[in-house]
Length: 212
Image (cartoon, rainbow, N blue to C red; front, side, top):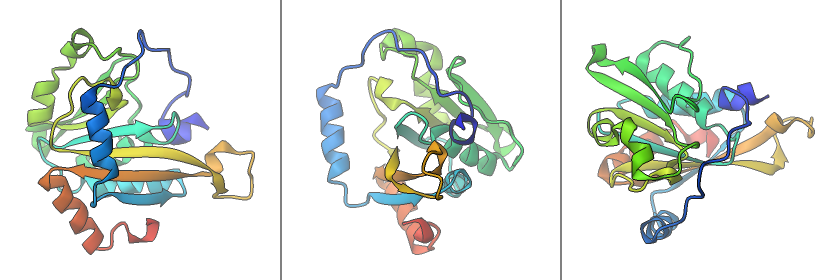
């Protein structure tokens, strides 16, 4: 069901305008493809997706930015739920996609830091649309989880890019008619030393080994 992977219905409105790829976007794609520190993970279940979110929340600090891209219904909000629950320590926290609110925030570290969970799907990518989100402040002081980052007109240089795809060629259960039985494939690409070092640490500790 949609609830399992995305925290809500899969139907979403068409954005006001198509987002065009800029030269900067093209360079980012080339850099991501050639990144030697990229990690690919097979994610069999929604629980596994939440677990990965929780693992990546450990040690997260203000200024951390995670960009979540990929197929509709592939688990972006599910990952965010695990991250937010892990970081806040509130494991019953209700975390849904902020499709219409655009941004939800969660206090951590006694309220001194916020986790911002944003869904930019409905935006055109114009500077005017992004202005209410106060991204400069969020990227500098908060921990940001950004769904549909293609709407951003500029990505922060230090970031973790996560792409989620539904692998229709492999089934996690014998019921091939159940869309939620399909594996999700996750690709993590770090930009900047803070994320490179963090992913290297997670690998050295074997925290992602079972899923790779």
